[in-house]
Image (cartoon, rainbow, N blue to C red; front, side, top):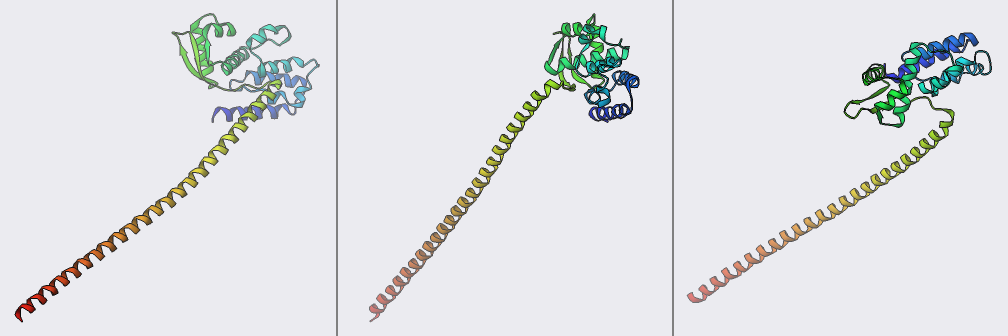
Length: 251
C-alpha cells in the first residue's frame, strides 16, 4: 500500500471514530491520532463538527493540540507549551517530523545548523539519525545527506495540511496552472492541425510531381518511338531508293 492510500485509510478510520464521540472521548482520540506513527495529515479530522464544538469548552486543549499538529511545528509548541497538554515521546517525534516537512516544502537545501536549532538536536550524528530513521524511512521525505556541505538536500517532501488562509493562494495557483495547461493544449492542437494540413499539402505536391514525372516519361517514350519510326522510314526510303537506282542501271 502506498503512503497516500495509507494516509487516506487512517484519516477515514479516525474520522469515523470521532463522529460518535463527545468531549473527553475526543481528547483520547486526538492523543491516538497525533501519536500514530503513520498519520501526518489532520485537517479533515479537525474539520469534523463535533471536534469544532470543543472550542471554548474545558476540552479545548485537545482541539488546539490538533491544530498544532495540522499546521504548526516543534518551535510553535515550545512557544505555547503552557497552554497545551504535555506531549508524549511519540507526539514529540511526530511534531519534529512535521517540522522537517514544513521546512522541506519551501526549501530544497536545509542547512544542518538550521535543522538542529529547529529540532533541538545537539549534534550532527543525532540529526542525521533522525533524518534517516524517522523521516526518510517513514517515506515523508527523500533526499541526500551532504556531510561536506553540512546540509540535507531535499528531493521529495510529502505535503502538509493547508492553513485556511492558504486556500485562496492555492486556488489561484491551480487556476493559473489550469489556464496555462489550456493554452499549451490549444497550441498543441494548432500544431497538430498545421502538421495535418502540411502533410496533406505535401501529399498533393508529391502526387503532382509524380504525375509530371509520368507525363515526362510518356513524352520521352513517345518521342523515342517517333524517332525510331522516322529512322526506320528513312532507312526504307534509302533502301528503295538504292534498289531503284540499281534497277535503272540494269536497263
